[in-house]
Length: 115
Length: 114
Image (cartoon, rainbow over all chains, first blue to last red; front, top):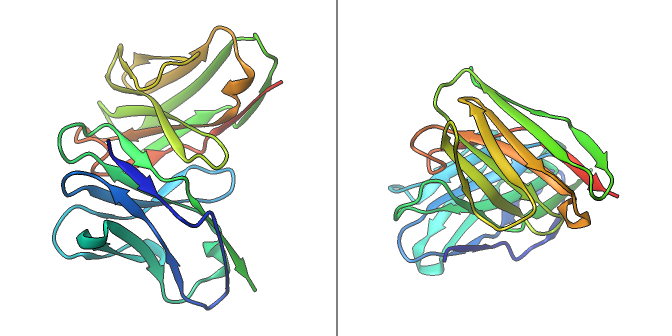
């Protein structure tokens, strides 16, 4: 069964600093990979996704993520964090082998941004 | 443009009371619809999904049920709430190609069972 691990429960960075949120997945084939962001008390918004092709994908709000098959990772990065980036971030994997109804989410990483 | 509405935003219910959460989608036809539950520190868990009117698939056994009486309406229900039903419930929709394209989430309902 597919699974997603986000090793960092909570990360604090200063505004303007760079950011990397880690995501490791377990899946037998090439997965569909996603990063979603959730502001407090809100729904989730898609930041970016990877299906195939270029392993470095660009998303909204200046985020990017790199798929590394050898490390089973899909880490999210941003070169300079803004205070408005404070939120919870979820990595997710979709099933490329059949079911297109299920996203498996990690437990999330809460990002705090200090002024 | 497509929008998804979910209500109520917050709900406090006593143990043993019934539950009905409603979700509607506008601006699209024949969407796939989903109910997720989010417990603190546990990520999101898929509860139900539906590919059409009256077609409901359950992912986990539980005290909840779902129904889809109309194409763009998805309802989450319970006859008798348990304390363990507390959580943040999110409705989502996707196109016919499924969540591997993109899923769009509602604002969520915070349910507290007391």
